[in-house]
Length: 353
Image (cartoon, rainbow, N blue to C red; front, top):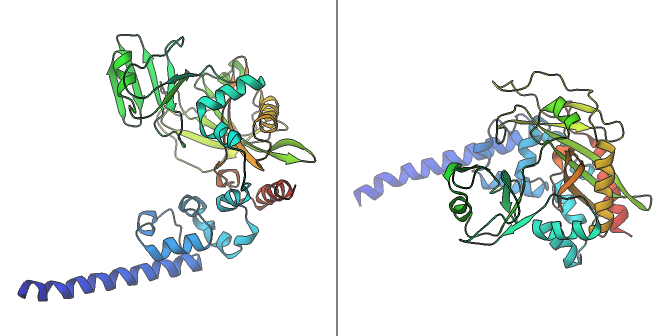
């Protein structure tokens, strides 16, 4: 009884202090007096702030990514097209075949082959032991058949008896069969050749494959490109660089814009200025993405596609129904409301068709 009576006031004081801190942060959020990215770990701990995020139809990553511009967006939320709006624009009765095409990377590869869309050779690895690479040679890129945001992605290089698997979980060495059996054993994987940039692009950003993220929609009765981003490796650390930067690409001229976010240079970063540089294969990638939208997912209003500018031309990696909206809005001057309006207009056109 003595211990209970002495610890209870401490707990009550702790709860009261937590409530005061939560209310203080919530007030600061509403008034736009802080950069959410600075105190992100504290924001996540408070349910009232999480409810405020839900009320304003912002996912946590958007609140963090907007930073000091979060207040501007929250105050005029209905004028912005963000992740919640993309999800709301999705047709209620979308054919299952189209959803499966974007959900399963193995199905996506089959559908690309059937429609004559350029896609890397893809080999399916079942769950558990006994996995092999089929006709593929090392190095290969491994990823779960179903998954998002590079979860479980890995690179396997070396030889049959002395291979190295590099993933977010660490670097593992051994024979190929053992490494394959131990990587995400409870999931079906796919394996693809480790792609590289076209020679003209490699001269600009190095040999490690840059990824181009293209958003397409139906405009004027046909599908076309609305936005393109380039995710560029900052160095040539193999098998995969540890640092990347994202820049807008003018898909009509091929010119690179400034980085979405300024970041201090790293030890292995390239020192070549890129802004204004004209990249190869940009118009071809925009065309390929629009064609994929028309052939594979015509009933979706907006789709995000990942592509690589390969040595033999553009290559489709995958399509995404729930692609990240915010990166396509961010600029060095703040979020781009004009791009937001373009997304909203295309979603409304197809939604009413």
